[in-house]
Length: 508
Image (cartoon, rainbow, N blue to C red; front, top):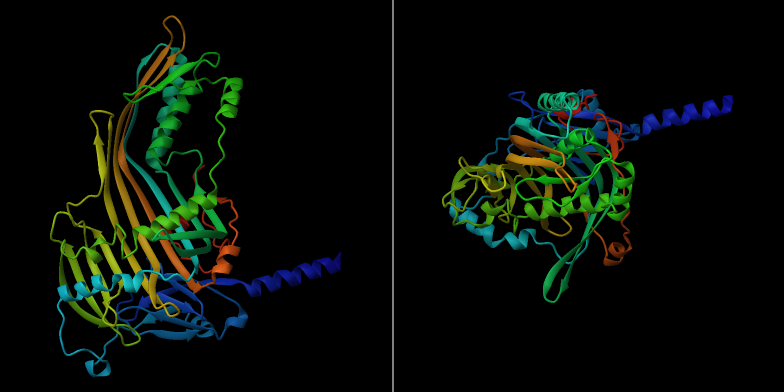
């Protein structure tokens, strides 16, 4: 017994030595302000960034004391130090704003204006960003956050022949409590996963086809399973609140909105079990959904064809102005280009950083210009629904792969939001030959849905076609958490969560 305890203690000590993570903060040496989205290279393979608060997670062991850490940010002098040196600095890195003499760098004699620079960005966009036929393996981390904020939420009973006064009182009390809880603590959901995302480009009938495979190493979610975080979930929750008080021996037809439904519902256990068997469908795989999220993100933010990156290609839609030039840590010139809409088709305003060497956009900050919205629907009069995409903003960083000489999306922090308005009647009508019970209510909701996404490509490397074919996708399960647990990813380099996520807790 003593031997087992000693062995266990030794393994525990060894584990603590092998995997320790520390949070590092990057500051401006002059102002003391945090520097978000700084590039960090740990050793020879790991490429990460600081989060919106200028922090990143360092995973290190005692054996890594001399491992090099390179920190760089456009307009600042880079800093290289060891893990041991960083520990001596209390895990704080202060970057100094870079001041270079023009004689120290090679610049062209001809001064280019913003429009000529953007013309070259457009001309070189395929060369800089379109991947070759060589398969690629990317180690990626994705964090998705959704917020459901109701400006108003009302549920009114307009007619009730199926409830006694006591039951109706119980229902109204439960509905009032549900609304109060939803308003006080708006539903939120966080999803994280880390995995290997591999892709291969092939030609089929003269067209390029991309095949993707995903293997997830770790995945977590923080979500209150009892609270609605979408319009569909809100309507489903509301229906269930009323269903539980209806007569379990009767059958009802549900009518939602102005167009009636023929679905038959009952609170009878035997009826619902039979219906569940008849309508049983295979549950969607988590790996399919995760891969879809990555593929959609890559497509949306690709400089050559992404919907968001229109300001890089549709140069006749935008007004571009030069805001000078700055140098990277390795003495490369980067043009600073401001952009804003010139034509009604344009949606965004912001700043791009363009490499003088090959006219690749290496970084972009964007947001919807004042008064601009994206697609939406307005069926307020017909179906009681109004929907509008009114938030789209973010920061994108592209990095060059020295093996392929192509740029890829290294980091993205984007936020999308939708305004919603719902005013839908909901009826439970008893199925009977005579006059049956009817419960009619009106659901009114107005608010904002916000979706935030952070993406980090830790490492991209070439693999062979044979290696790609050997990759076998395996489904995975999300580990459900009540709050963020830093120990979950302590063996991996991921995006350090901001304080808001750290403090978030599922309410009882």
